[in-house]
Length: 350
Image 1 (cartoon, one colour):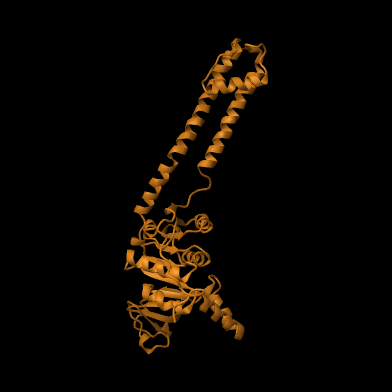
Image 2 (tube, rainbow, N blue to C red):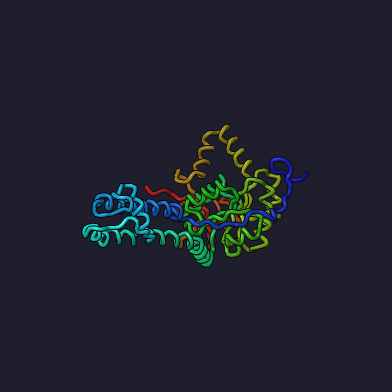
């Protein structure tokens, strides 16, 4: 029977002419548009201040048509601040000229600084972002790459953060603008693009990644992503999610080290909860962090080495030995070795 993903699984070729990948790093609130608006408000404020100063001392100025109105004062402020200076409105009295020297000239300089600063900021924003991305990419090592920042991807990132991973060591990939914005809002570096494309994966540093989480919504896309990841980094640990259990073998044969069947897991939890609410509560407690039961993988303590699993102060569920998982009821799990890894439910103090 052919594998299915919400219907028959159709392997779709990567989009050859899709949008170019765009790296979006977490940044502080604001940006060039906000900076331009702030500087524009400052410039308008400077112009209005000059106009008010001139209008209050309007008797010391002369216009070719006679007295200086407030509109003339605004006109004088604009041509003076922009250093145009047509000369049709001129200061005549000593007071007006002194105010021009002590007040209007510094304001003119401030106005020019605002304009030049805004222009330089807009022109150099792309260059600064390019340099920032190059520095980020040069230091990107042993990170977790999450392909797909939908519900599953965000939950995976949340679990990583709760386990102690730093946000700087997590990179997301997604083609959906809303998901890209959500990742950036969460402080996660994100590459906008199709995760089945080698160029996009390379932008996210797949070659130096420690783990890859494939959390795309379609099973066929998950297969393509896994194959592309394996081609770029044969040694990376790949965890993939699929909707249909019958597609899990295909994902494993494509190179996924671990496959999580989301529909089967959710259905089993629903079935257990309907038959025994207590069982469902225990499993939910394990899945939801901070609920009292947490799974932890750790090295054995010196006191545990050479002893039975039952001698541990924590509840040991499994032992990882030479890449093989031995459950607590397996006689081969005893005794504990120094190079083992223990999967335990930590015992709460008190």
